[in-house]
Image (cartoon, rainbow, N blue to C red):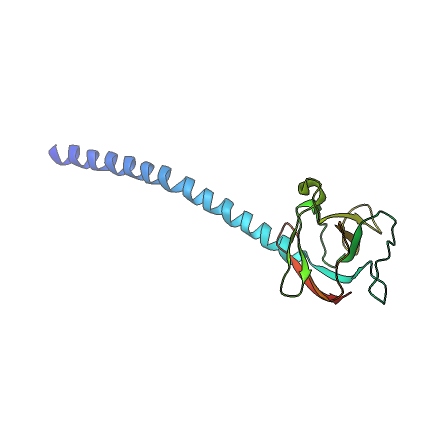
Length: 170
């Protein structure tokens, strides 16, 4: 009789322990699975995203004089960036833009974050409704005064960390 009671108690304790272990491990397994799925989605998005800076120029003529080509009274640098990936790029205002003379560049804030200060930048998609694959984004960097002639560095990084850089002379 004692053996039957002890065996029954051991079975009950085993069942309770099994349930407790399952309740402790199951949420961790599910959370790990969700994290892996999220990481896979981000990696897939990064693999499908790609950009290329195709041209950059400033409003300086061949002699180094400012030519206000768009008649806005500001010195502007124009940059064309093509979406050469296979997915649409969103939240363009959150793109990081670095620009300046070679070896002395800085992050340029988007116009909505600059509070009216120069330099700042804005954008427009030139050949589509949004920055979808094969569409070209025109970025205009606004300065309050003309820049000097020289070699300049430009780097743009999308919100999902895809970037391209470019050196050019004005």
